[in-house]
Image (cartoon, helix red, strand yellow):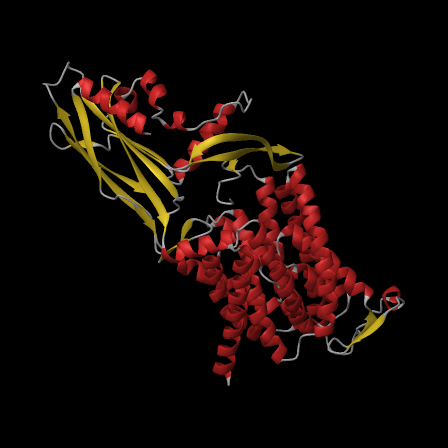
Length: 308
Length: 248
């Protein structure tokens, strides 16, 4: 069934969009990532103008994250206090990021930088997570009691002032590290046009030492607000949010997110992490190949008049 | 426009051969399930006297969508990776352009007549003052990319004569059509020279829900943005509620 999208001004298959939304929704619910880093390139691929794809994707992530958060809230796996601290940093970061983005656009080559950002960050994070979770799985297979797990205490992080108790995460740490993580993710999210879950999740696990189960819900919680803010910005400045496209994607997305959240609780934390890392590495590889291989068509029509 | 029509009319009456034409659709409405359209163009040649000379009569039909400025970038390998390097801003390129003819275009139309009436695609793309020596490469790339999408079409031999003086053709409009006025021209040529020309505008407009969403997005962007968020939140909540109900 073909549907004409009023803002994107292209006609697409409705079931294809529902399916894409569903698949990305499952991943979102499982891993606590918004799925933007997967969905946005997929939308480019089916012929949605890039500006519309980025803006509409932000709107869709709001829906799938909200659906996911509700599922996690019920299981009490959302650290609202930590989420609020991260969000505070995230909004500051997003405001800074928008300025950086505008400056880069003025120089040109912004899309190259965005792609390089993706390759570098996805590569580093995917690689680190992959090897860490591989080690964790090997450790778990060893007979019990052979090597006691050393509890990693980050001395300098615990020495920082402004300590706060995060009961859900079982942490008593300074608010400075989560705030800094939030700002950093906010900057990247604004530049790369994504919710930032794929950076946030590993940062919470490895930098803040939060338990994996809590990380997913908390990440989704702050993504709602960051992407909601982005949707409003896009709608009022570039008029590129396509409501029809968003509805089609989010119907699939919210259902997928519920299924994903259900699958997520059945998997072990290490398995969850290794799957996410494999996915991140695959997207990274695809983007790297795009930059390295000789493209079929050397010319691209950049501004197609669809952006208005 | 009226002056043009007048000139065409005068030229037609002076040359004793005129074209009378009609379209299957007066206007095209873009609805939610719009998946492209086809317009049927038919016409007849009116003669006041027996056909002059031995050169055969040819018909050229063009349909042109609204023009927009377009930037084309060329990728180049730098430090091992492919980056956008040179760019060319084309002042105006039609979003859609179809040319259908009864015979190969080179045979149906002389170059001077093409320059005068801007009939071929090369004439429709305006890229003056870009200052690039390799501008033709960029133009060729634009035509190549848009031809693949079906936005630019050259259908030689697609216009058929039914009788001696009756002709028809069908032009396929792709699904990703831009709003605007589409100019349809039916051109009669003999020996490469334009004998008569008929012009008609087909308005292409979004209607119903498409129209409403588009207008809201552009005239009340804040409300539109908030509405988008409300829909997203409501959908997220509903999915969650439905699944909770299923599980319990």
